[in-house]
Image (tube, rainbow, N blue to C red; front, side, top):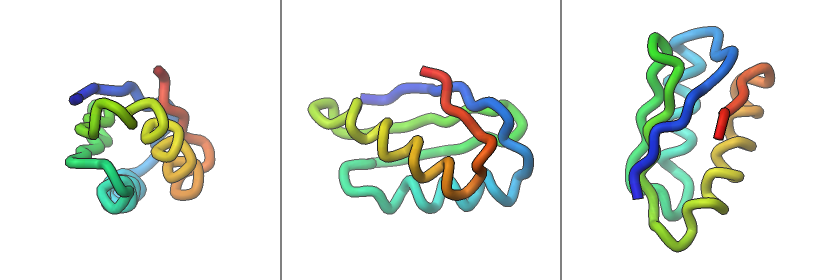
Length: 72
């Protein structure tokens, strides 16, 4: 499943890259792209685990950028 999620309060491009790298390492994530300019996360992951992976992605994002929120 591929889904585009809106990000809020992502403050820098370096943080976006760190987030992307960390998300790609999660088990079950096929691909991830974080766009600082568009404030979007494009996540491709296994259908059966997608909702659980989104929760894990939220935790990763909070670790990298505490103010950033994923709007689902």
